[in-house]
Image (cartoon, rainbow, N blue to C red; front, top):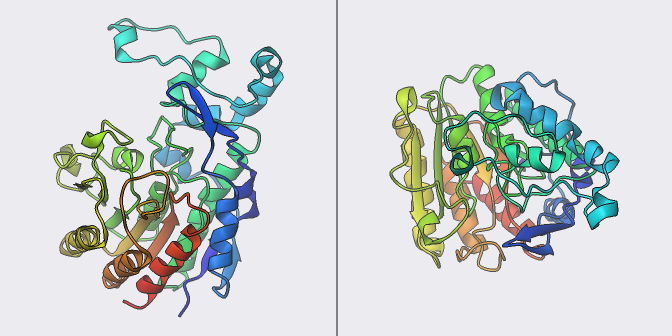
Length: 351
């Protein structure tokens, strides 16, 4: 049985144009063509366009201040003189109200939009422009429609979300992510009656946003395997093995950082380790943050996983037999990423 694919043409509307890395504009890699190469690779799968959903679940995942900023920032930026003055037609922060700046003092709200951006965006790589909100909000509808398919009896559904989302915290965005699609899917599965849901994140980078959303909650487990942030990889501050949750959520977070150059063997073993953890915890539904940037030819990570590795990972997680929403995260090598997604879905459907 081929896994149904949920998508929205609106997800193509976000055009990052470029990123700013160590002060240098570089071409964006999270491009609309990602949607099309995946659709091409999954030709033959049942295809369903996302249905609109209200903001009920989204507003439980993200603070209203973040949602309000994302919804309006691009229009406000376009109405200001930024493009005329410096040629910048995307919202990009340059000023960040860190604890070092505040020094314990109570700040006043910044008046300038270019200063306000740094209250919500925590890097200079994640630019916001015309169509970004529409694409990110459509990706949320994609994830929620996939949950609807499970509620109607489908054993699994693939949510072709774009832009990705696992780096978005309740109040902050970054890492080419704007709204946390996987967290929304997990919350919606809880609403659908699942007492304990697991999120397993196989993206090459730690999903600090998803971890933050569920950090103090025992009802949603978060497990991730990713390139070791201690080796200098995004998100730098989080994703270490000692991070296991807090309060009521103590023990509901698990991180398996991997060395640069890790390939199929130890990578699939880490997936299997998290699958066993999910099974032992008695979860009744699963969300997979399906980044495929752990592949050897992906430009955004040093891991060396092959298509067969992704197929085996799909088998490990499919073998849990849980209703599953497979949410697209990273993956940036256009020539091969569609085939990697197809390999994972094939393994998941036939464990």
